[in-house]
Image (cartoon, rainbow, N blue to C red):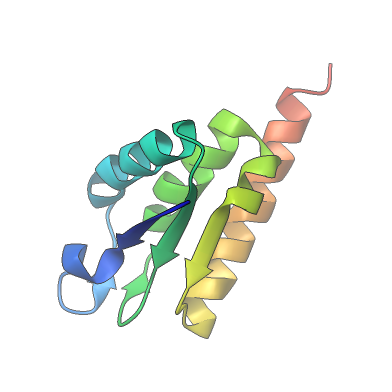
Length: 102
């Protein structure tokens, strides 16, 4: 089963950009993941800042580890958004692994 979060309904113009906007969306994703769902993050028609992606995706990685990425689906990302997601994911996966490799 999948739960979809359509980001354009949270955009100002064509941008989702604040941690404040991302935080409740991360909570929504957490609830769906806890029910065993995959979460689709639909970026159709929007761009996103690094801070937004870090709060949404980075927070999930730091809490659940890199394996959570296998349950997240990134849909309709621009090249810029995809690059931000890849950067944030790599950075937070590295941070998680360093913190949990005692």
